[in-house]
Length: 192
Image (cartoon, helix red, strand yellow):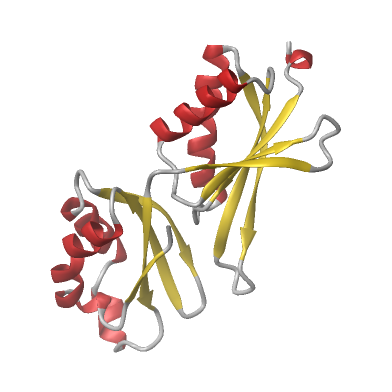
């Protein structure tokens, strides 16, 4: 069955997903492609900044063909599942050794919330809970965005939220971030 799927496509995600979180998207994509008999997921990878923080990730796909109908269907599936703006489909040549074209995909904006892990008083780290930060952020962003992944570095912990609008996500959590002790000295950044 898999022999007939010979067209290689890479979904390059402008998203900071740990491999375990990328797998959630891979599983959903694989299920839909299989059901529609369009192709299958062949693998994936994660790119990192020198610090070790996630930079982006790839999902490797094999499609039944490279017709415009198949590619448009794939794009529609991706938009329905929701991926970050700045993502793209890389279409490989028949030999699979060179990208012949790119197609932009993605409809979500991203927000990273970097919690300072070294400069706050010890009592704050002992009495505050990052899970409470996540719970409160998601509750306040309900219908706007949600947590997709995170990363723990030597000096900070990053929480990656994706949703309709960076500005709306930021506005939804700004009061909480100003008040909760663990969020002191935190930094927010638009990542998609």
